[in-house]
Amino acid sequence: MIESLRAAMANILANRLRSFLTTLGILIGTAAVVAVVALMQGFAQSISAQFADLGGGSLKVEALNTRENRLSGDYRYLKDSDLDLLRYRVEGVGHVAPVMAAPLGTASHRAETATPFVLGITAEYQMIERRFTRLGRFLVPADNDTRRRVVVIGDKVREDLKLPDNPVGSYIQLGREWFKVVGVMESRGEVFGFNQDNYALIPFETARALTGNKAKVDFEINFTTSQLDEVEAVKARVTRALRINHNLKFDEEDDFEIQSPDQIAKTFEKITSMGTLVLGGIVGISLLVGGIGIMTVMLVSVTERTREIGILKALGATRRDILVQFLIEAGLLSLIGGLIGIAIGYGLGHGVAALIPNFPPASVPLWASLGAAAFCAVVGVVFGIMPASKAANLDPIEALRYE
Image (cartoon, rainbow, N blue to C red; front, side):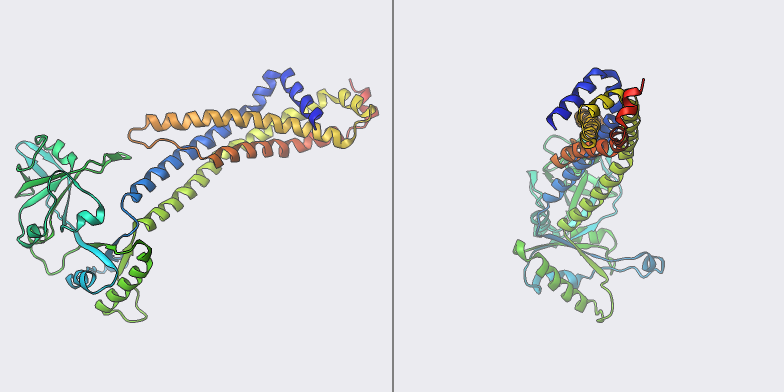
């Protein structure tokens, strides 16, 4: 084996240009696969980190509206009694906060305007979402009870409205209503071009009043569990309680949905894994093209070295010896191209991630590098079988006569 490896390396070095051109297909294919995996893994890790900030015990209940009931006009809503149910009657539930989108239009201050997401919330929202103020204070229960016109804003809103560095005490307009700024939230920055600080938080009852005090308000309920290891048990209890409160029969499906950040993260992880496999498979087709290139060049090499093979056989080399030598040479060619391709793909992935604004850094897991190197070696051996078999089956007398 050592002698076969030495002979294969000597033959590769003796034909450097041809060896380089032979491995070019494998090199490009491996670089493309590693770059794609690096970008997808970096993307997935960034999203996982975002969900990790939300905490494992944070859950959300929202009305489940299918396409059919939307078209029929039978739009489903959660009820105020659902909120009281979770607060006072379900064991294991910690903090509970209703959240509703307040359609108040744009925010304005003097001549400046902004378009934040305006949410109506209660004081418990801070503990559930683990978001804290950088300046001023968060909303308190009294703000909700008295429907005060106060607002806590994200840092992006402060910048867009050109408010002072400490805008606490300033007044801004949300739609046609004036609100006093009582706090500024900690900055979370951007993710994939989406700014996480472009929002404004107002008291839930204030938001309800500004929508006209409709009997049915579209809101969701965010809540936490008292113990992190009781998430599934609490979900089951909440489901039972809500089904009873919604008068659902045994054979009727839930008209609500309970979600947790880890569920969303797992779903996203599954999607990104499938995307990585699909994209990697598509790009990996070039590895097969590279393998065909190796097979073609090895067949030419067998023809060129026919007389050498005849001499080896005349000196006692067996069919197995010849087969192993050519297989090692093919595998070595492919492996060298693969290793160079891994290095190029690593740099390419990080370079592309750096060029895309706000894209997370690329990440090349160890399994991707080892898998790519092993796959390249396998491709070389598989596509080297035919040339190696042809060389091993040569008749020594005919090979010695070959010119």
